[in-house]
Amino acid sequence: MRGAATARKKRTAGRPRPDSRLTIPGVYRRLFAANGRQHWWPGDGAFEIMVGAVLTQNTAWANVEKAIANLKQAKALSPAAIVEAHPRRLAAWLRPSGYFNIKTRRLKAMCRWVMQQGGVRPLAKLATPELRHALLGVHGIGPETADDILLYAFHRPVFVIDAYTRRIFARLGLIDGDEPYETLRHRFEDELGFSAPLFNEYHALIVIHGKDVCKKRPICGICCLADACPSVTSHKPAGD
Image: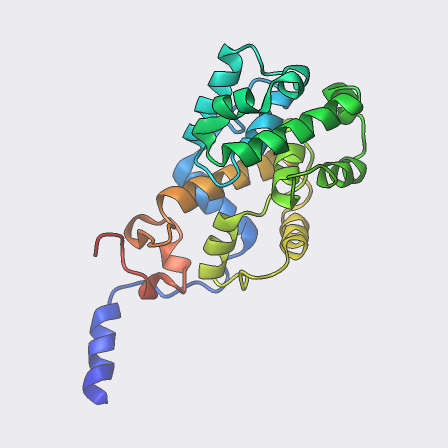
């Protein structure tokens, strides 16, 4: 037993002990210092951002860009053009984004709803709770997609919770990771204060960190949070 304890001490020698004082605002400061401003969300105007929020479900952003480029090339990046497009033709344009038949139905549903509301401008006049409730009533729009739209298309102070958020903050020991969406959203909003620019930047930083560093198999050796992460000793870098 003594030999095993000695071996464990040798393996962890020189590694900083996890800092239990790390907070949600503190994580933002570290991520921003390490990565800088992300200039999110890519898109020309509120409607294109709304389209991107639907298409990015279960796919990489590079694939969404290809689908949006197809819509632009076909001069079909408008609510009316998407609603009027034949489903098979729209699905062909959306094919790069994956799950294109499902996304065809969801995108048409959102565009019909936008048209029923009189376009994007009237939506921008709605109070945030009213707009969020309306978005959640649209086929294919769940809490994460609705909050993407609220934050990036309408600049509302609503924090987006995604799989990267759950993974990173569970590993940091700041959340369990399986809390209900609304529980986590309210916690982040309460601890950060209601600031759309801050939420915009923070969510973008979480995505880039989750995609490039805190992966399913994390690369702890290059992580700006490693010295404060209680999970760092239990994950080996990718490739080991």
